[in-house]
Image 1 (cartoon, helix red, strand yellow):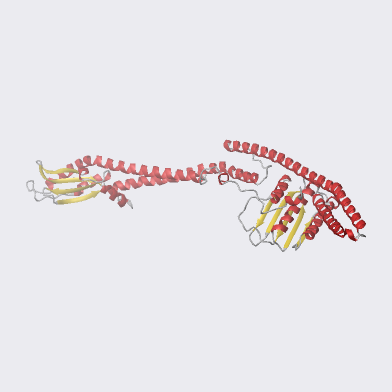
Image 2 (image 1 turned 180 degrees about the horizontal axis):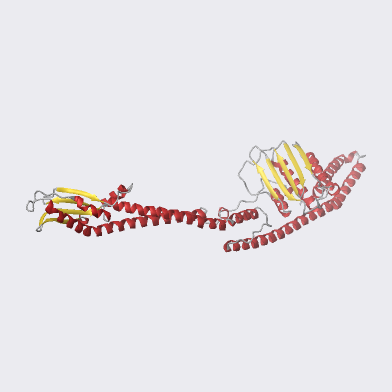
Length: 483
């Protein structure tokens, strides 16, 4: 097969895949879960909910307990105020009523309540709130909430009596909600202490979780290296059993992938070697067989031309023989060019650099209006293994052919470097670049990628409209020859 058939042709591309085949058969992606953050958020939400429930339950319990104690408290208050009535007014005067609520102050040591005394005509005689201590700051808000829940039925009403059992008024007793709110705030302070303890517990829990999840970063880094083509990456045995099993499976997968890729490279290298052997065979057959036949035909045509030259009667035949000789000469030259491309003579005789210089010279000679081609090289290339040498030559040949045919460039730069165990090739042009959306690769680019992959290297194309195209190839050199 002539090498022109393997050169890059941007108009000759493999058909694009069907839309259904290009669409990944997976469901919609979900946001990644941060386990540490999720754990803290759930712990915080649970703690807040539990705190609210406990505070609400405790507030309700305080209210119910205060309401339950109110009747007993009202009985004690009634007894004290009834005993004090004979000192305050005439026994039979039910209109002139006075009460001294100071008699209730001893109850403030243990009880908290609000009392209101009215006469029989619902006129207020006295009112006071007795509490053991002043309410806490901020208790007013909670007290108003408790008072909003208070109903007339929650107030204990007792008669105010004078001896001998004459009712002269009414005693209204209800809980002191400010004191009860202070008790609730005291409980909230205890909750705050519990929050501090919970924060310490969260720190104690999150720290070992964070340490246990630390191998996740190593696993992600190893996956990234494996995705980049490094099949030698391995994970250590982690402390957490789940991560240890993941590491074992990853190491097994990486080993199998390394074996598979090595087998694929061997097969690809073998196929490339077979292709080169076919090229050599075709070059030899064209040179030995076709070349000899063409030489013989050219000699026969020249002999007939000389034999008929003296006779004017055969002038038309002489003209035909001249044209035949020119055609045979062009065919012979074309076959020689094909033979040189199939089997570069300077590459085999003088090495890679000389072969590439000859390739550039032939390209300038064969393409009219060829742009300026600059070739730079650095390093020792004579010690490269012959298989690597011929494949590297073919990569440059196909990359240069692609730039000459399609780039519409005025300058092409070829840079080849060998640095220790790595080979780096760059072919850059200042042409029009890729002006369309990415499409499937043609035969030339596919051939470059296949050769680089078979040699364990990487290929990259960088292109932008109006900014030219650059081909970057990196290959291992140490595997194929001495450094």
